Image (cartoon, rainbow, N blue to C red):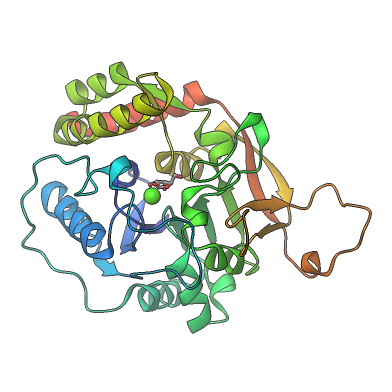
Length: 319
Ligand code: BDR
Ligand code: CA
């Protein structure tokens, strides 16, 4: 399957990218960067660093430096992903460069090159995808589907991670997310409702370090910062599996339970970035929900199987 990976390369994005690269059924045809976990310059540098260190063939395209409209939070969350976006591990500046085509244009060009074949895995802010939709109204039909890590709907008791109701990728560009979730493409949302169910600990990262070669070492080393951040928040030395869960859905959808829903994103006010699903229908017929296509949202996950999928897939780096 042909995959474009749209990412704000931070700690968990790197795990997802390495999972894609480790999966023989995936043909990674482009990596598109965006602002988010770090500045655009930093996430792009990280994508190139990973390309140089692990030798993935896909070109790196640089995407959006900022949101389309109001976003939640200022600056970059270096307290989550470190100043270098990869948990402040030692890294050398890559010698590789980005492809000159801007990220949104690259999404359109690749979708047009392989009509109906490309899955877009979007695990950063939705800005690049919204800009690509503005460039080409046929994009929803040209793409095979879009798998998004983002949002939270309250299933399994989960709430937001950047506000009580808002997940970071959606809060980072609420307008872009509202555009993308209503664009009519075949979309699956893998949100905190399931990613916060799939929890890993130090033993998980130690096994990867020991069994997954240099990829396992990078994942182990960068996730020390991530574990510490979550420990400082929760008092437990564990963290959720966010972006890798989108890759797990792509390759093992049988490990997830989904529900069909119409979704809108709040673009103003104290609930900025909240994802709301319109199921069941309320008493009043409200215009904001008219003419919106349905998407699939993940509401359940076999967390043990997702953890095992990640470990066994990444173990190819140890062979
Ligand atoms: C999402 O936000 C980013 O910080 C992570 O990389 C992930 O994509 C989790 O809310
Ligand atoms: Ca991400």
